[in-house]
Length: 324
Image (cartoon, rainbow, N blue to C red; front, side, top):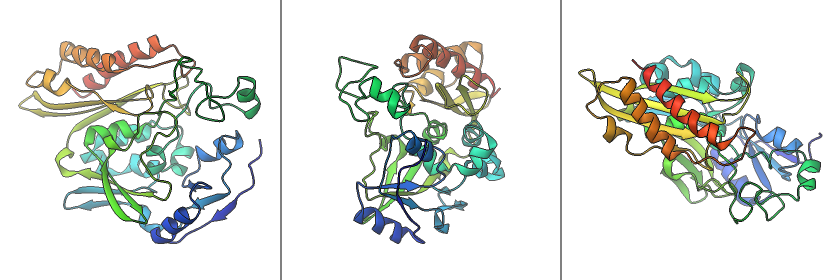
C-alpha cells in the first residue's frame, strides 16, 4: 500500500515546529520515529497534507538529570531509554517497559514521545481501506458505528503504549509547547479516556519533555506484557509495577495497566491494601485481584476480554514477585 501525497516540513527549533502546527492545524501530522504513523498512512487511516519531521530539533532528545529528577526529551529513542544506566538504576520500571516494545530495530527508531502519543488501536480500525469499507467503517474513522459496542456512541479503541503505565507508576509529568507558551500536565491527565480523540493535546501543541520526579527514584520496578508473538506485537494487556520497601515491608506500591481501555490507568487501592505487608504469594495475589477488577477490556483484539482480564491478574502477580 503506497503512501498518500504530502509535503515534508523540517523545522530546526521548537518555535518553528509550533509555528507550523499553528498555521496548518488540521492538515498536519507530527513525524518522529514514524514506526506507527507511516504504516497507518499506508492503511489509509491518515492522509495529512503536511508531515512535520521534528527529528532535527536537537533540544527534543536526550536524558538529563535535574535538581528535581530526570528530564527525558520526547525524541529520545526507546533503545536509549532501555540502555540508560541512569534510568536502570533510578527508574527500572521504565527501562523494563521500553525493552518490551516491538524489536531492537523498531526501538532504535521509535521515540518515547511517540509511544506516549501512540494512536489507539482496534481490531476494526487497524485494517486496510477495503476491509474497513466492507464493514461500514467505524466511529474512529469515516463511520458512526462502534463494532465493539454496537449500541453506543463512543469509540472503545484501546491505547497500547508500553511505556505510559511505567510513567504513571513514577508520577511523570509532561512538558508541552504551544503558541500560548509552555505548560506542564500530569501524565495521568493527558489522556481523554475515549478511543477517538484520545489525547488532551491541542492541534497546535507539541510534547517536548517527560519529567520524572526525584521522589520516585529508587523504586523497584517490573513490566509484564501479554502478546500473541514474543516480539514485534503491541500488548494485548500490559502491567507495570513500581515498589518501595522499608525494613523488608512494602512502604509503597503502584500498578498501572495498558492495552485494556482507551487510556492507560493507575490501579487504585493497592498501596493501601499492601502497606506494611511482606511481598509474598498472598500479597501479590491480592494485588492481582485488585488489578483485575480495574481492567475492563472489550473485544478490540483477537483475544477474548475474559482471557485478557484474567491475564492482568496473572501478570500483576508475576511482576510483583519478580521484585523479591
